[in-house]
Each structure stands twice: as C-alpha cells, then as structure tokens.
Amino acid sequence: MNLEATTDAPETHRTDEDLLLACRDGDPEAWRVLVARYERLVHAVALRNGVDEHDAADITQATFVALFQALPSVNDPDRLGSWLSTVARRHAWRVRDQRRRFSPFDDASAHAHDPVARRLDELAVRDALAQLNPEEKELIWHLFFDPEQLDYAEIARRLDRAIGGIGPMRGRSLAKMRGLLEAA
Image (cartoon, rainbow, N blue to C red; front, side, top):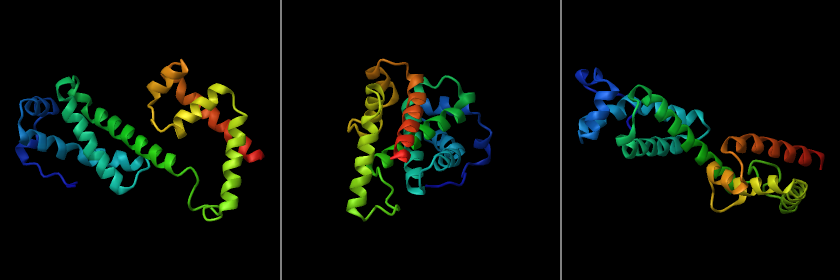
C-alpha cells in the first residue's frame, strides 16, 4: 500500500466534492487523488482501533471499496473524512472481535498449554454463564459464540431491544461475568 501522497499539485487543490463528482463520472485520476488524500487517515484509524499492520492494510482497502460502492449516495462531501474514519473504525472493531471469538483464552496465559487448567477455565466460564439471566446469556451467546456473527442490529432485533441498548447491556453482562469469574 502506498501511504505517501502522490498527487500532482493541481489535483491537491480539488475539493472533495469535485473529486466525488468526478469519481461518480468514472474519472480514475480523481479516484487516485481521493484515495491518496485519505489512505493515511484510514490506515491510522484502523491501527488505533487495535488491529495489526496487516489487518490495517486490509481494512484500508475494504474502506475504500465501501466508499466506491457508496459513491452515488455520499451526500455530504465536507464530512468525507469522518465517514471514512467511521467505516474504518467499524471494520477494525469487526476484525478485532472476530479475533477474540476464535481465541477465547489468551494464548499467552499460563493455562494455554495446560489442558487441565484450560478445562477448569472453560468450566468456570460455563458456571458464570449459568448464573446470568436468560437475556444476558442470549446476548453473550450472540456476541461471542454464535457462528452467524450477527451485527448489533440483528442482535437487537432478536432480543427485542433498541440497538442503542445492546452496547450498555453488553458492558453490564461482561462486568457481571468478570465478577463471577473473579469470585470463582
């Protein structure tokens, strides 16, 4: 990935609105300038949200694919940087959460290579889950164990809750789990 701006002097003076209009008309040079203008920002946002360099590069690419697909509907060119940052951040969160789902225990922990200790950890998690109320159990299932990897909107729909309530409920449920595990 080229993280250095390689725009020609005249191109750097074009507004985001001009570039977006040109991109919608299929101008490849406008697309190149737009990507060069924002790729460092997008890459940095991905890195700041807990992914490694390789994933950040993939997220940068995915973010610009999302922009390309959304070109006809981008209505506020003055907020393009914010839009790209939000998309990159959400991609990073998704990648980071997927990594956590596939490694529920920290491989660097003392229990990583001790099958008895690992099994005891698994039983402690199972016991803590059993002490949650049914709605909390279902939320934890969808967030960390459900192979469908649902987004918050779908989880909210299945729990018959507002999407804005899923994050706080997640925080409360995980805090409760943490307390139960620490007490065990």
